[in-house]
Image (cartoon, rainbow, N blue to C red; front, side, top):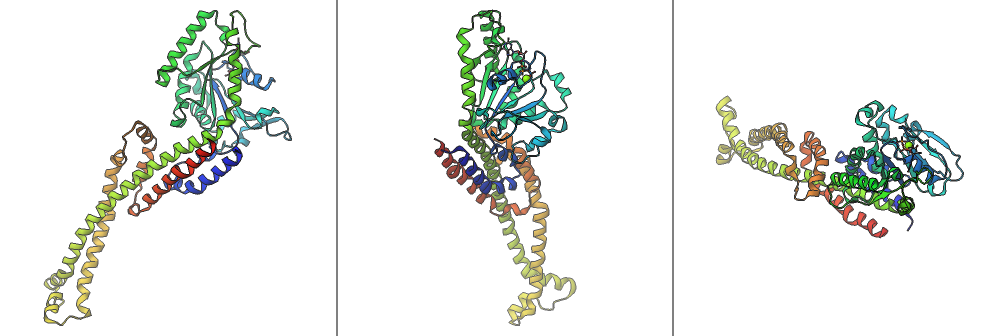
Length: 448
Ligand SMILES: Nc1nc2c(ncn2[C@@H]2O[C@H](COP(=O)(O)OP(=O)(O)OP(=O)(O)O)[C@@H](O)[C@H]2O)c(=O)[nH]1
Ligand SMILES: [Mg+2]
């Protein structure tokens, strides 16, 4: 299977079938669009000095990234090879966020300070032809984070959204800072991708004084992880160290393989690319579906309101038809003969209809005005207050999905007009369901 071809096919299909619906329901399409662009990405995050850059240099077999004991590198660096014909060198963030072939356009929103700390380094390494690594500045404590001039956590979570693999690296002494980072990325990853996109790495284990120190650090970490993930089973944690830096005071031979296993795992990231794209689409289309479902229920209820109002208008209209002549006659003495009298006396002609029809027109106009200006806005406001009742939240998954889309539905209800009562939502819902059941399932089957 040609992954690249499949990716392009998927990109076209999504654009053709879903883009209009994303616009219609006020969902941001750029996330999905970015996820479909460019090559597989591996994101390395973790506390400062945990050894991210050292690890990357080791993968590359050259000293590309600066390393050091204090917080060393305050930049987000994409590291990749752009084919043998391109020269090695750096591309600044300002160029990256304006290049529409790259998935970083929406990072512009993080502002100048971020852009000044963003760059791409081209290196020639065969394994980077179909993959890019992202080295990140280490997570600092909350107080120092404020000085960065951009929101580090949201930048990290935006990168995590794009990444096919996130390596969460920490050293035994600063495992505490990992919690916030983990929470930030967990919320952005699709529900279905469980933990398979995150690799946990405890690095610099050579610095543990002895085995019991290592076991204690590992235990603390497991405890922290189970607190963070809310799960009883502990995800696999790679225990590693940089052989070149290691202080060989402890016998580490049992763990010497883990570094290689971690590297191998990172090299397999491209294989999961399509699967991750499908998970992303799946998640976003499910959000779209929920919005559309809510609006479909709203419009159905609205049509019932309209039907009830219509019954009332028809009665009022009939009354107006027969009584308007009488009322006019009583008020102004005109017309001399009401419609009913004309009917009884058999002298009915076209002019007898003028007053009754005008009466009906007046009632229709007033009722229409009343519905559009008073009854419908009141109805929309009522649903706006209790929007969650528009959808069936019978599972945990749906409840979580709702927390993501509630604001979108509320925004649609805020601006709803009587046009919402046309049948469009049901048709849209059909399209979305068909996409999930046929198109997306088809792609899942292809990669199996
Ligand atoms: N003993 C030991 N030292 C290491 C290991 N890995 C990295 N170091 C050293 O730790 C320091 C920090 O490593 P970096 O690779 O710069 O860490 P980083 O995570 O990139 O740090 P920031 O870029 O500041 O976030 C450097 O001096 C490395 O030489 C390791 O496994 N064991
Ligand atoms: Mg670094």
